[in-house]
Image (cartoon, rainbow over all chains, first blue to last red; front, side, top):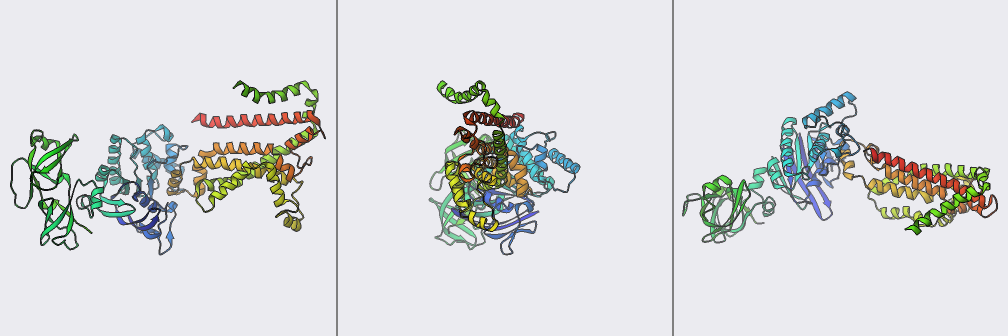
Length: 365
Length: 255
């Protein structure tokens, strides 16, 4: 299944514009509230009309502004789950789930299909219950079952887990991944939770003020943001401003707060020339801490630095380093075990090692 | 507090005590004029409410859900008859549908039909003053239904009509019933607009409140008649209120 999407729409304070293709994968739409994530789902579901664009679901145009095609929500055949679930309170679980089933199914077919879906979602025996008598997680599963009952293989999920506690969310995320495998779903998943985005996303779409800023594989977006704004939104903590001082082929040497950092130029566009202002992105988990002193290591960036702050998160530690001579403050994330092995609790001065390919350079526009 | 209770209970007690003491009242309860007026009131009010539900429900739903230019104007217009004295509504109806009215004259010229002194006029007067109560109540009932449910129902393939009957209506009917009771009671009590627009014609436009006025003014059954007729209306009102409570309670009680 695929969703091919290109749409524009004037929306109050800003202009919405986005274009992407989702194919047999989970695409996480990520951004602050009001960034345009939910709008994207509504445009696909047929609950909002683009001013202009083309939307194909599995190759079939459901909206095409030039050809005057605009299928109503009833005919788009996508499963849509919203944050507050909107379960029908006066109907039983079975009635909720079968609400969207095709009209030509017999009573027996419907009830066997309801049972199958409820079993798949671990809701056996809840057929006759009213939604309000269920726990939050069970209600969540009913909403998923109802969306799946239309035999749609495209699921639009609008922050479906955000009202639940952490443990339950973790369970449901795993369940979603399992369902995706079993049923071969294409899922568009809206969230503003970075961890959720990381866990679920095959592809990541970063939205800000109505614009799709970047669309790509998860690691690509997290490690190689196309702009300073994407880096900020995706939680990059080492985001430095610098100036190119030398260029050899695609290798750049960049002056950052008194230090020189080597980094490759990854993008297809021409590399910035010496003198150009650039932004540097380094993810906190990509910086290596070495106990022994090294003045330099061939092919690596090396910085002597001291810990100025540290935070323990249980499974990992976040450390902030101040370079001894010159350079930017660096944030480093380290797992609990290496933290102990390196004896960080009793020592403050280390050599930080940074692979040039882990430094991502963004040209300033 | 006590003063308040006395103030509210005393008038009804007065009615009952009077009736018990005065045998004449008992006889008049079954007087031909009173029976006829009660029957007219009952069936015109019921017809009015039926029309109100048929035409008022779509308007209420539209006001609750749709956004369109002039919506606030329409909204205000619906409220107008609630705040307006019924006599004004009567005069307004007369200027529109009276024999010399804006629409009344051409209709009279074409078809020879005049609204004045007809039962149709009674229903029209009741419709104008009572339907806003239903529209208001139904609208707030519809507004209380989470709109996301309708949107989800659309994505599940349900048409607007099916969504309304399967999702919206089952959740908002207590509000609609409350609106029906309000509108029906208002119709039963309608006096001013009917008197001015429909006139006071026994058997055709003389509803219960009009009969009471006439009795009270001494031209027919006298004060005893007015008391008897008031008792009848009181009985009807109490029955309706109790039934309404029962219906709504059985709904909220079982879930």
